[in-house]
Image 1 (cartoon, rainbow, N blue to C red):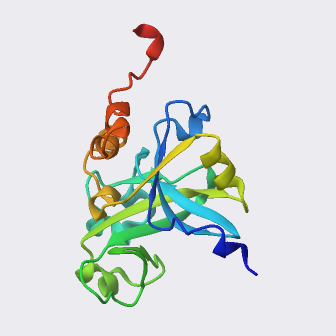
Image 2 (cartoon, rainbow, N blue to C red):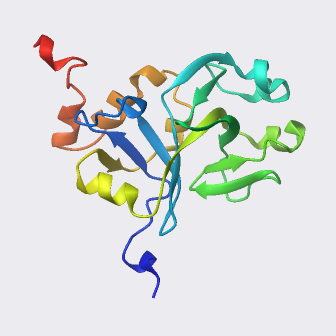
Length: 189
């Protein structure tokens, strides 16, 4: 019997770092889970823009990238690899795009941009990703490192990534909405 029957998939959901999470790679991070099963988990940090423009590394895709038009650091693993994530409304996506969850999917950056481009609602390019081995994320969840919340298509291309952590928490109910007001440095209170 597969362990997947015990672990429900979180693919397509957001991991929002709790204020208690001590790893600087994930301080106030919002991670979109692209894959979660009994083999492990993979996601991208949605709110870590770099100063590198998409045109500097993937010139053919630069015109299709949403604002701010920079590459985002998707996580600490494989920083030399690029992932394209796009929102495509409707039931059917074009060749070169694979649905992950709802309207959110992965773009094959080897495909010609003119093939995929006309269908894109939003595109963001990530260098690297966040990864967890089997059971590792579940342990972090039990330890209280992450809040798990529903994603919305606009999270992928949020125009102000520096505010995404607070925005995602604010739209939650109850106690999580209050966490959005947690100070950057609690020692200054």
